[in-house]
Length: 168
Image (cartoon, rainbow, N blue to C red; front, side):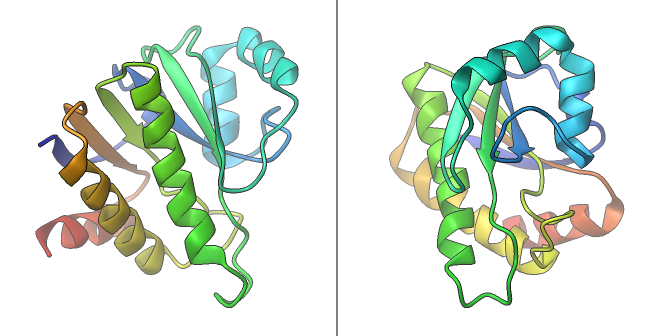
């Protein structure tokens, strides 16, 4: 089974097969981790994303990593939190599952996830961390192709949530 671990830092600096981008549906860049990934990867990323024609919430798309140490970027669009009664948890779970499925379809073995939807999209960080760890753990139990999954956190509070999820 793959190693799951938590790391605090800048996801754009990780040397993995793929980093996951918490993108908006246009895939053309934005704020937060999305903007940071686009800036670090360079204009070639935006050009490739423009050719993809966007991405619906819960789905995923893959591009090259360009100037990033990561060889690929898997873009997924998380749900906007609207109180939890509008399918947000199923959509967030689909983000993780579809990113992992796309990675395996491209023979990737190492991947790093940010805390999808917890920034501007307002998903409660504790709920997001619990769901992310549960979904990834369940998929890894059946998929032996992954070597490492990293939950990349921007701050200590988020790191503690993912560490607690992994310990549970």
